[in-house]
Image (tube, rainbow, N blue to C red; front, side, top):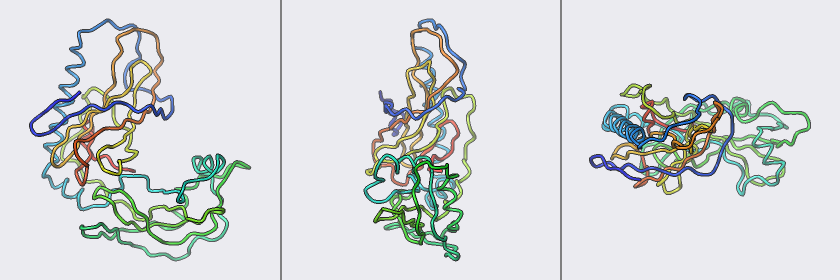
Length: 297
């Protein structure tokens, strides 16, 4: 469905069939039998969400916070990149998923303390770099017995290409040589900029659910994928977007069910891909509930 508010465009995106896990406590009450409605509740929710999205966009567009966002370094994609061609075999994929790494060798004892993030047609930015040991610890969990593992045989400084809030960038990275692979695993070493303080307060009374996180942006910038929470009593999550010249505001809700039934207070985290009218570019991606930017953290 689509709605229009001023010059902005609002669309509703269908949920992808990619359920990510998990029994978590819902913020809403458990459900049982529900009387049939005339749809007025859904209309009220849509109206409240659209109004809040317009408020968030108006607060951010042209603000100092928006300028700070555009001048910073904010990753908008996974900061760990497997070797070219991906991981081979089920065991290696499991080891990567479970963060099961074995370090064979020494981590660099000295390293540059800062590095430059560079963009095409945009000024570079100097950022502090994480130490090799700290970076490795964020990647590798506690190795579990004889479970499949990936062996790291060397670590050296390098660069990687990464989607950021200012578009594609070349970012300082640690290159981890893996036993049995010709190309390295890359781990971004530059620390992201602090998120700017939001010029608008969270709306804790707005119906719907908070977005959990950003998982990716399409190569052409025309869609974003986020993780939303919904319950076993509803028909899945829905995410609307309000686009303006300076921002794209996402508001998450759940699709109600007309039929009654008994369910538990459990929920699912599900990926939802939201289509945009034009590439995101350097526009701020915002959560309507919190009024804050959505970045890859």
